[in-house]
Image 1 (cartoon, rainbow, N blue to C red):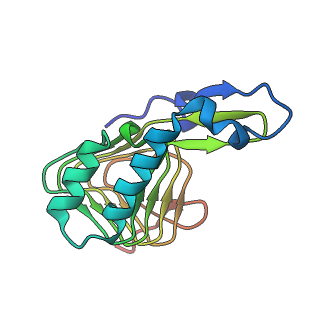
Image 2: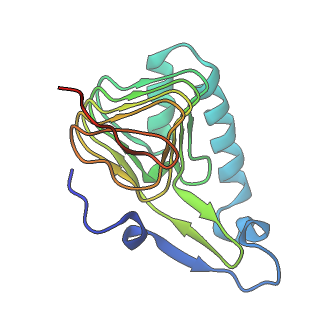
Length: 168
C-alpha cells in the first residue's frame, strides 16, 4: 500500500449549487433506495456477532473485503459509499470504529477511498476519514481520528492521530 500525496489529493470534490449545505442535497448524490438498503445492511453488520455474516454483508455492499477480516460489534462502514472501502486480509476493525468515505461540507461534498492493508488493526471507537490509506501491519489506537495516511507498520494515536514513539 503506497500513499500518493495527501488524502486531500485523492478526494473527489462535488460542488453543490443550492443555497444550503451539501447534506441537504444528498438525494442528488445517491438514490434514496440505495442508501436505505445500505442502512439496513449496515444495521445488521453493526449488531451481528457472526463474522461470516458481517463479511458476506460487507461484500454485498461492495466493500472489497479480504480473507479473515474481523469486523467488531457496532463498527460502521460508510452508509452512502461503502463500495469505496478496501480491507486487506486479516484486518481487524475494532468495536464502534467508523470508516467514512464521504464528507458533507457547506458548499461541496467530498468522496475518497479508504484502503486498509493486510493485518492492520483499527482500535475501538476510531474514525478513519475519506481518502485515508492505512498500510500493512499498521495500528490505530482506540478513539483516534485518522486524518492522514498511516505508513506500513506504524502505530498512531490521538486526535488527530499521530505516530507513537517506541520505547526500545
